[in-house]
View (tube, rainbow, N blue to C red):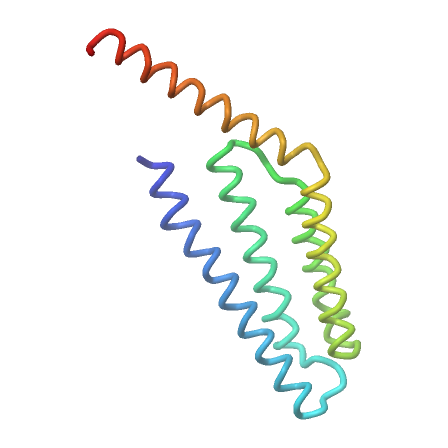
Length: 143
């Protein structure tokens, strides 16, 4: 079961790392807001944006491994967020967070509206149908 091993261990750890890193970045952002720092400190910006990038890349890797399809929209969003890391350290805290949320929201809307999701669901339906056909054939033969 290399697929299950890859997705549910190695790639799942990257997903968790992305979530935890993003949470730590948000904690650093809230501390900076509480201390009234105007721009987000460089390391805090790197942690916040980097956590989101790690999460997006892990999700793209899961889709690549499980469905053998590259999710270009996720990769484009990861590159865009990486590019926003440096300017994010030089603007107001809440502006940097708002831009990050806007990019992630735009990615979610784009993925929902495109046919990528429909293609994946159709692929899953075909696979489930093939499994049911094989199970029915086995039942007819042996039961």
